[in-house]
Image (cartoon, rainbow, N blue to C red; front, top):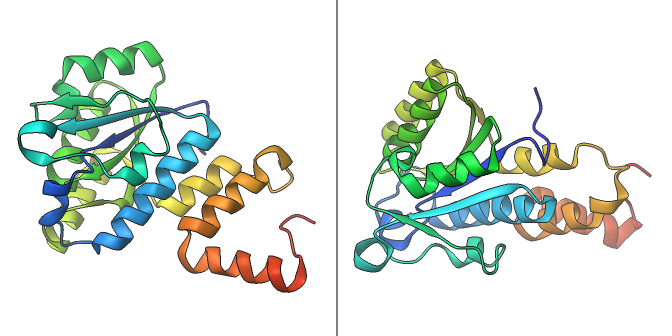
Amino acid sequence: MLLSPNDHTLIMIDFQSQMSFATKSIDAVNLRNNAALVAHAAAGFGVSTILTTVAEKSFSGPMFSEITEAFPGEKLLDRTSMNTWEDEAVIARVNAIGKNRIVLSGLWTGVCIVGPALSAIEQGFEVYVIADACGDVSDEAHERAMQRMIQAGARPMTSLQYLLELQRDWARTGTYDMTTGIAKKFGGAYGLGIIYAKTMFGASEGH
């Protein structure tokens, strides 16, 4: 079943400086870009979103500005637990939102994402993981974590897939400019293709 803006909660976990220093499964530039794409897509489509950090002030540092800029004024839920699902404030927010579908992204895949993914699945939630908006200390660590979650029932997807799944139809003109704007800024080669087509031919998807 495809995702829509109003049927899930996005949880972005521990996109922090200290966690990113040891992340080797994805280039830091790509990681920040993909996280920004996810954050701006969620903010633009009004997706219920939880931003959480671990030991922000004492150890891990601030959340990526590319994410927090998409949610001005949003309170970050800081934790001590490695498993986000074991933090009372986070669970209280999940319960208050009340949606049964959870989308996860963050650092590291094998700890900060596996924990809540498996815990949520065990409790009956439908879980999606944005694989290229997660990272770990090695390719092996990331891939084993993804496989473990998939075997447990989690559904993998990518950051660009997430954006385009929320838009779904280019005839939805109310969010068309926002979606293509996010893609042009954070969508890599796809974004460059949009810029080229619009500049050279005045082209628009669906027209």
